[in-house]
Length: 101
Image (cartoon, rainbow, N blue to C red; front, top):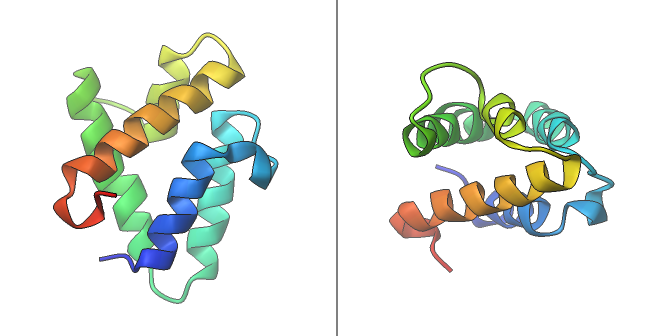
């Protein structure tokens, strides 16, 4: 599982993407991808690209696509895509007992 620092960084990205110069969901994906590749362990990849994608697929009744692609498909604007990411990511964290605020 992820440590608290990683969770805090992901939560900060979801809640305040502008602090990380993120203006749309694709930039969010690239930022998280870069962050996960910089870490020696690949836990972030499994947490976001596997578990979070599964959560979004269940939430949206979608069977195909990665988390950022599903969010983009459901969004009308870049700002809406980030709001939707925030909504889904916070709901995802709440669904995991260890990561509730």
